[in-house]
Length: 207
Image 1 (cartoon, rainbow, N blue to C red):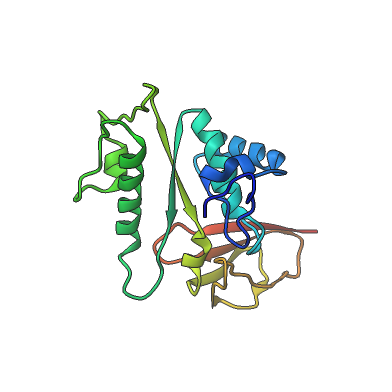
Image 2 (cartoon, rainbow, N blue to C red):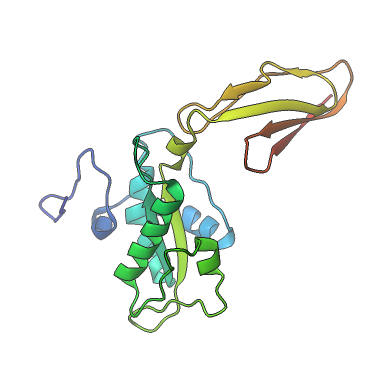
């Protein structure tokens, strides 16, 4: 949707990057999010549906990153049956964004993983104004791809029990259990494990 001074509101649609001049009232959130992105290898933006996360990313964060010579690469997975594998979708999104924004780009090969591409010894991207660019891959609506994933829960130490030893994530990739403490004080460790990725361990102090 094309916005202008006579039509500055996209209705139920998200603000896109080219509409950032009409995106107001989120300066504090933009700065906080930008600072997290600059300071961390991975940043997670989480909130209820409809809060404006996509608008904050596209019309708020992206222009701020470009001012600092970072290249935002927007990815939104197609999760419909029959869609291409997520790794292939990600590969194409990175390639298409770089082709659109970089002069004389160094592109990933079809048979090359993104890890291999981004870790080439000669990897570099340059803007049209001759500034080196750092790609920032942004996965929007990523929680939707984590729905109905099986999570196995285990009490590793400290006694007690969890209400379920296995369950599935719901909308937004959320899984939760109730922990019942053991009979003694101390620290309990509870593990959440999803097949194929490192487990997450929570520590609970019992007083």
